[in-house]
Amino acid sequence: MSTEWPLWEVFIRSQHGLAHRHVGSLHAPDAELAVKNARDVYTRRNEGVSIWVVKSSDIVASAPGDREALFEPANDKVYRHPTFFPMPDEVKHI
Amino acid sequence: MTHDEMLFDYLLRLGDTDVVFAHRLGEWVGHGPVIEEDIGLTNIGLDLLGQGRMWLCHAGEVETRIRGAGRSEDELAYLRDGGAYRNLLIAEVPNGDFAATMARQFYFDQWHWLLLRGLARSANSRVAEIAAKAVKEVSYHVERSTDWIVRLGDGTEESHARMQSALDLLWPYTGEMFAADEVDIALSAAQVVPDVRALHEPWLASVAAVLAEATLTVPTGAWMQGGSGRGGKQGVHTEHLGHLLAQMQFLQRAYPGAQW
Image 1 (cartoon, rainbow over the protein chains, first blue to last red):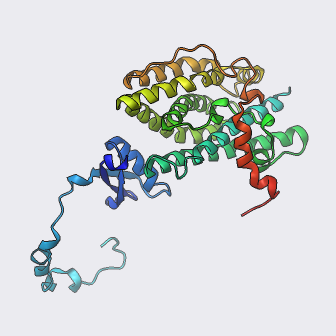
Image 2 (image 1 turned 120 degrees about the vertical axis):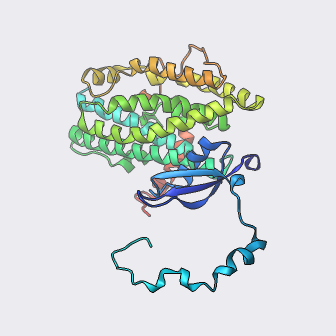
Image 3 (image 1 turned 180 degrees about the horizontal axis):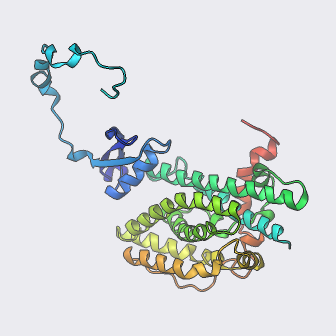
């Protein structure tokens, strides 16, 4: 039965102000039940205040074979990291 | 019966219905059609168990007022025999297939939500507080079972047929939910509980609306289990309760006071 149900990716926002994070995936027959299943599977321990689900098949991913072309050029461009600036301790979520 | 004796009996009805229902849902652990549903059903079971604990705990406090010594929630749940249980018969009906479990859940959730909403306005503040907490959980239960009824009813030919026969099978257990005996009538006159008879009309309207959307038919059978004042609420049960309690109570009976 589960093989007939589409796969959904689940994103949970844990508290106000933070972004939704990918937490896992599940099977459900449609979007409404995907949200309910996500509630039951991923928020049982008070993890979230908001749920997004998206069909896994709707996600466009980069191809592993393109890794060198996509990501290696950034390796030697250290000046793109903001590590040359001292950050005040009070600044969170950076 | 004094007011407290009736209140004690009524709290057992609420608590026992939750605990027995929770046990039935727990029987789905490892047997759900998919893991997501396995978790979903048992979450609902855990919600009901939590509510059952609150009702039985309060029952024990009321029992202390009556007799000077009241039983704990565990003693009430694990050390009473079937004849002392006061749960609705619909809670003890075996799970059957997924359609039967959902039909039972749907009939019960729709009633449970109406009842708790009424109990949340109780003149007894403790009852009102427990109900106000529980009604939030049950609002979700209602949504979930309603979703399934619509999807199975308006699904394939087989799911439609199985859903309809499950609704027909469970229908005779719905009458007891609205049958008032002297305890119901006296407590509702004292504004402690809603008049359960008045819940039938809104219940039937909700059930009929969902079944229409699900392309299913509202069963019409007039004969009801336990509707004659001799049902679960009075301690007269189906043959299934004894088997359920034998499993549920085994540990505390075999190893009295065991903790882990």
